[in-house]
Amino acid sequence: MKIRSFFNLRDFGAGIWERSNRLQRVGIALISIFLVGLLPFAGASFLATPIASYDAVLVYPVGIFVLMALGLNIVVGKSGMLDLGYVAFFAIGAYTMALMGTLTSLNTWEIMPFGIAFAMLAGVLLGLPTLRLRGDYLAIVTLGFGEIVRLIALNSTWTKGPNGIANIPMPPDIGPLKFKLDDQKVFFWVVVVMILLTIWMIRRLSIRRPGRAWEAIRQDEDAAELMGVPTLKYKIWSFTLGAAIGGAAGVLYASKNLFIAPEMFTLNVSILILSCVVFGGIGNIWGVVVGATILGYLPDRIRFISDARLLVFGLVLVVVMNFRPDGLLPRKKREKAIVKREVSA
Amino acid sequence: MRLEIKDLHVHYGKIEAIKGISVVVNQGEIVTLIGANGAGKTTTLKTVSGLRKVSSGAILFDGQDISKVPAHERVDLGISQAPEGRGIFPGMTVLENLEMGKFHRKNRRHEMNEDLDKIYALFPRLKERTSQAGGTLSGGEQQMLAIGRALMARPKVLLLDEPSMGLAPQMIANIFRIITEINKTGVTILLVEQNAQQALQRAHRAYILETGNVVKEAAAADLLNDPAVREAYLGTGAHS
Image (cartoon, each protein chain N blue to C red):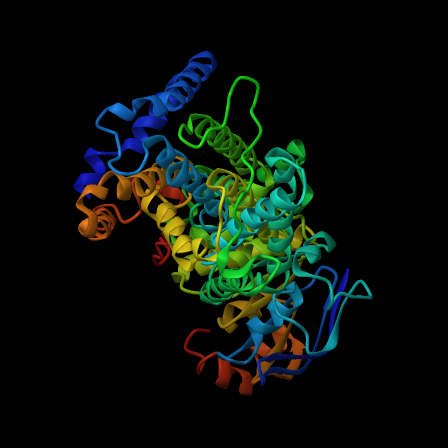
């Protein structure tokens, strides 16, 4: 409790935002984006990652994790459905890029809509029968789905099985910005743009009908249905939007990594992305961004302690979740479901 | 408006919770279903609002069978429920809760203000607490909010599931007084209650449910004076 009252970054940030006028807000946003855009140039500072290349780390895991965590947050944080198979959509996006990139002459940007569409289609197909389930049951089914997608990739000839797919083309240059293996600044900027688009979309939706419907579903699904909210429709929408973002992240990842194999899409990834969401602050966009950044970056930053790395990583998770059980930047307090039942006054 | 439940059967898995209930609610009435725990009162109500599936039988609303209509579309038809245990959105403010009540009617500002005024007139307490989170209200206030929210949908028939549950006697009397008031504005009410005393005093007609069957149907006033009913549901007369 003490720590929360002394160190409330969320309200501090929200306070600054609410006190500023429109012009100042645009200013704050632009400066923040500019500073984030400069991040790849900070490789020589204390931020540097030993062993792994710094600007590559910024793209994957950090950037891609943030993107995926934002997508998963729509499903888990906004509408309250526990999805343990999120990696499936990432894999579908990645395999779309890999197959279409090697078999056709389409480039990354042309394949992107296909990757997103296939991921969304998978979301709808999985969602229609399963989103009638709730809580733990849904978690188990999605977990199974994640494994099914991986096993299909592992055992099919058209996905080249465990060998994976190599020689995936890089994205074509955007004007003077060139995509290079040894200098991934441009990749990072592309990820940042995608993250910004995602945040913009989520914020738009959150203040409109879908946002209110998701919020109602999260707090009390039966009551939402009784208010005339078509709950199944909105749950599928939420699921599908999350899938779309996962798919987009997958396309970009495949195009950046140039090689993908089924072993990259294990349950671990789903759990890690879910950890990002919970660690940062479930339901709060900025919390999720911070959480995913830290959890993506930390393992590479402390790579020099090699074997003890994952131990430290786990320790950080345990310690932080103990001190801040609602995440680093939790959603606004009143949004949490605290039901205080008293005998009527 | 006429709501008619015809030979309704409802199952939870293999267990039959409702074993052929028939209930009629006419325009302008307050009809109450009373009975002990497990009699099937709440299940009946949930089936009318669409949260539970019908195994067999029919639910006729204005002569049209609605038993296949999904719950959220029944709100459009004019069936609105205040769920059991209040079922408000604890993290939303009172105003946001009320706004959710007219979710199906899209954004119509002036209509909403009109409805809000009506609801605040019925429940002045809610007006004092518009920006307070629903979860921090007292039990009675939560119940008011649940009823107010259901009224935002401009229902033809209002389904109330145990509005007296867990409330102090004074608040119970207050809630029932308001229920009568709502009824006088032309809203038909189907009321499920364990507090038979209050329910029978306020209702026009009543059905007594026992283990999924209707065992008695009569004018509420008659049941209030029926010795067998007094024995089983109203105590030995200590309250009257």
